[in-house]
Image (cartoon, rainbow, N blue to C red):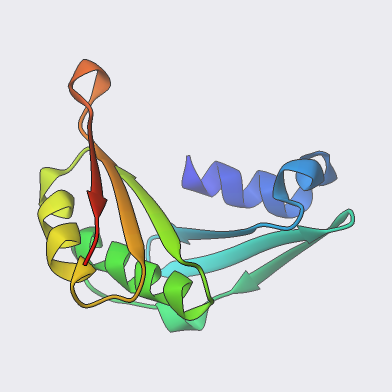
Length: 117
């Protein structure tokens, strides 16, 4: 799915209205991209600051979260099916400077968590 979004959003100007004025950070394997749109022009940039060789994606989520806070975002939404990520969110909330909103679980057993200092 992420590969599809990277390909479609970085090449197809039909998505400019959705992307306009927003910054999307998409991570695929060990590479990260920021895709933005400004008045019909799509920009795709490699984000080397998010490069990681960690095998577990769980910690990479919080590397990206810190990156978003460094860009000036005050809130990050994380959607996952992994409860380990929820536990890590509780831990990292005390370290990171921003608010984490988490949606985890599957189908009818979804849970929502707002992590605050």
